[in-house]
Each structure stands twice: as C-alpha cells, then as structure tokens.
Image 1 (cartoon, rainbow, N blue to C red):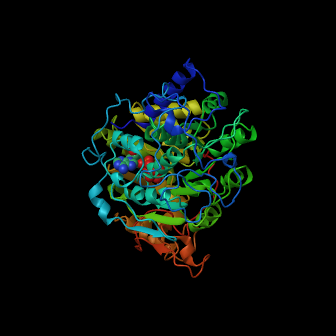
Image 2 (image 1 turned 30 degrees about the vertical axis):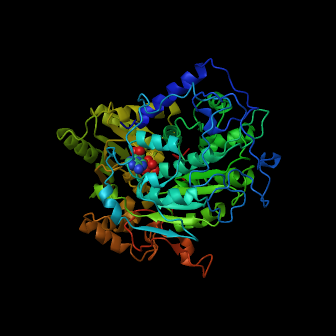
Image 3 (image 1 turned 90 degrees about the vertical axis):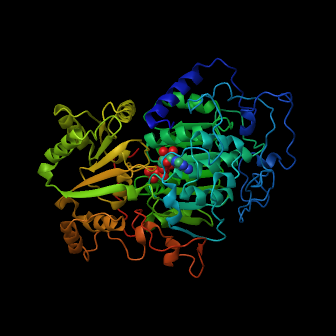
Length: 611
Ligand SMILES: Nc1ncnc2c1ncn2[C@@H]1O[C@H](COP(=O)(O)OP(=O)(O)OP(=O)(O)O)[C@@H](O)[C@H]1O
C-alpha cells in the first residue's frame, strides 16, 4: 500500500525522533563508510578491512579540477562517459556492484522501514499489481529526445541494472513497469549524461532522477571525502522550490534507498536548523534542500558541495525563474560545487519555457533534451471545465459547487478538493468564509508557520478537512492521493502555473476534475487556456474561444509561439545555439499534446508564496 505524503511526513518525523533518541554508538566522521557497506547484514568478514581500491589515490579527496584522470575513479565498467572526464565507476553489466560486507554499519540499526511492512520481499517484476497507472496508454505516448548519442529507452525495470536493493524497493513501491519518463531518462542518466527532461505532471519524474542517483552512489566504491571539522560533504544535491516538496522527495528517496546504505537528509527553512544539523552530522550522501536553507548551511560551512557529483533540480523551470535564479546561481556557480561537466546535472519539470531552457543550459554539459508526451494517466483523465464567474460572485459560486459536491459525496474523506487562490490574504479569508459556512476547510500559504503548513497538509490528506485553500506554494510537485477536484478560484497569470495546479489531480491513473473561474481579470490567459484545453480534447466554451481570438494578435505574455508547442521542444533546435548540429536522436515526434511549458509563455513574475 502506498504511504501517503502526510503519513510519510509523520513517519519521517518519528524516524527523526527515533534517530535522535538512539543510544547507539555514533560513528566518527573520520571514517567514511561507503553506502553499499552500511546496511549489509553482519558476516564473517564484516570486520575485515575493505580491500584497497587500486585506482584510488589521494587525488580523489575533494575536487581536483578538470584533469584528465578519473576524479571518481573506481571500477571502469562499460558505461560510456561521453567525454565527462572523471565520471563513473562501475558498469551497467552488473560488474560495478559491490556486495562485500565490512566496515562500520552506521545506518542499519536506525533505519526505519519506510514501507511500514515487515520487510517481505515483493513478487518479481510483472507479477505485482500496479498502482493504477494506465500502462496500456503508454505505447502511444509521444517521446522526443535530442542531443548526441542518446541511449535507447528500456521497457522494464529488469532491463535496468539498478542493483538488487533498489529493485527490491521498486517492488515494495509496487511499481510494475517504468513510466515513459523513467524508461527514457533512467538509461540516459545511468550513462552519465546531463539531462533536461520535460514530462507531464504525475508521471513519475521523482523516481526518474532518484533511481540513477542512488544506483550511482552505490556503485561508487571508496570515495574518500574530506573529514575532520563539522562540514559535511554530500555526493548528490536535489533542489526543489518548496519545503513540502523537498520533504516529499526526501520521503520518496528514503523509500527508494531503503537498505542500500545510501543516506538521504532533507534541509528546508522554517524548521529548526539544529535538528537538521544533527541529522547531517550522522552522515549524508543525498542532500535534498530548498535553496534558502542550503545557502545558510553553506555560509556556516556546515555543508560543502565540493564532492557533489549529481545535481538534480526538480521543478527546474521554477528554480531558474527570477525568484530563485540568483540563489541557484550562487549555489551552483559561486560556492565549491564541481563545475558543469565535472558533475552530472539533471533538470526535471512538466514545463520548460524556452527562456528558461536557455538559462538552464549554463548548468549543463553536452546534454540530452527529453520530452515525454501525455502519460495516458494524466491530463487525458483530467476533465477541465472553465466557467465565467464575475469577481464578486466567486465566493457564492464556489460554495454552490462545494454544496453540490457534498450532495454527491464527492467531498468525502477519499475525495479531496484543492482550491487555488492568488494571495495569502485571499487564502485566509476564503478559508474563514468556508469555515463559517460549515465547510471543513484548511489553508496553506507562505505566511503560515511550517508547523501550520504541515498540519494543514496532514489534515487535508487524512480527509479530516477535505478542502484545502492554497496559494501556489502547493501548485507544484505535491503528490496527494485522492485529490478529485482542483478549483482555480483565481486563475494564475501564467499558463504553466495552471498546468502544474491542475496536475495535483488525475495522478498516476486516477481521474480528476479541474474547474477554473474565468473573468476579465484573467484575460491574458484566454488564448493559452483555450489552446491547452483544445490540445487535451476538452470542451472549450464558445465565449472563451471568442476571448482568445480577441487577444490573438495582441501579443500577450502567454502567447504560445508557433512551432514551439508546449515547451516540449528543445530550444537548441530553434537555431539559437549549436546551429548546424543535428540534435534529434531516438524517437522524435512533433506536436505532442504535452500541456507543458508554452514556448512563448514565460512570465517572470515572482511568486511570493515560494520558499
Ligand atoms: N513506475 C511507476 N509505476 C507506478 N506508479 C509510479 C511509478 N513511478 C511513479 N509512480 C507514482 O506516480 C505518482 C506520481 O509520481 P511523481 O510525484 O514522481 O510525479 P511527477 O512527475 O514528479 O509529478 P509533478 O510534475 O507533479 O511533480 C507517485 O505517487 C508515484 O509513487
């Protein structure tokens, strides 16, 4: 059974509590225990010193610059490195796995089973029930890749060598087959390539970047990290725009890395830093972070990025918009992270406007662009409705909708409604209105304390308050089961935000409904909204088409540029860089119905709701 987000948060909290209460011996940081050795069952040779790794020398301590030799060194193997100097130990043939036991096992006793099962091994791939994703629709999903030497996609998890421990966790998650983005992205990442991936909301992007990172770290044999002092040296950094999303990624990564020995830690603002520091001191391989708290830790020299070899930006377009870009540049370019080409960089989002692609290319080296079209489980299954509602009538109209839902029991414990508003004040006052009118509602926005935010989400997820009023802080990434209805009470200014908001429903095979209240205030969205709905085979009201045609030639900021459909297209193909180079490889399809990132639609408005 899938653990819910709020359950996961609760599990994570109790896990932290258990960890901090543990009386077990604390490992000294002077001895680095490779992740794959940390969770091995004790064996007769467990006290034997690890065999020396002949290719490793002191030059592997810390970042030594783009010199010819392998910084990462290790096992050789068959993985092509495509010119990435210093990349990769191990190979895809399985020879890179190190199953030796030995060394100190600092994680084993403390590791809480994130699946809440008794550790039973799930049936082999293909024998399990799946989690509801409509796999039959997969064959029709348009996929486009561009870049040099694109590794071919795989069809099954068994075709990918992620190691037995990760495979067991995939089975525990009840993932039967890789989703299209996973089928394509995982081989690319295992081949050591940088990647910009654009795939629909709810299509499994988190696992697409987590699996290769975990497998990559497990393949590393004896990476020596600098020691002494209080600075920690993670090997992978996953950045995301909100605390809740970072927490969710952390929970997912902990599931995927269960019993692999790979240690995942999350840091984000609004939570006590001392607790996070204590957690870091226990060791960290993968650091999941929001940018603000990470910068704080970097400035305190409690974290160094010197040893980073995997950098993932989830919701990458948001991370590189005007609100976040300076912080991201600081983290990636001005601290001690190895430069692009000396680390593996992966950017994921459901939307990738051209402007952001251009910015993002600064962080990437010889990268592959991947666009995965509609995952049959997602927008096809979201019914989109748009209603003309005057500003003054919105509140009563919403309550009418909710009343009607109550009648049909749509708003039950297992049928949640997420209402998006533009401002924090608006969220507070709408929550209050619903409350006094007898609707069980709560709210989440950036002015709430972290504790209040977490409580609100828990209460929503559990069905205690099945209506959540939210600002855009909840628009991206959150994987909340049973969200049946998303209401855009206030439409966003940017069509990409609309895409992410409605993507909170219709996830992983479930159906969903998205209702938008449209009026004169949302006029700039008329055309992209009408186009988006048409692409997704939705009924577009005649009045919306009329509004859309009025702004057709007015060049609004959300204007979608011809040929750059939904941002599912590599901006390098527009001829702005690398002219004359053939970028397309693998499958290429034009014109997918990916409701993702309009080419001309970037709105650099800073959303105050973000962390
Ligand atoms: N191979 C798979 N088989 C079945 N379910 C899967 C698979 N991969 C991921 N899922 C499930 O699909 C859901 C959506 O995944 P995830 O949150 O990673 O989507 P996403 O693409 O990151 O969405 P968003 O764009 O909204 O951030 C999750 O509940 C996840 O557990």
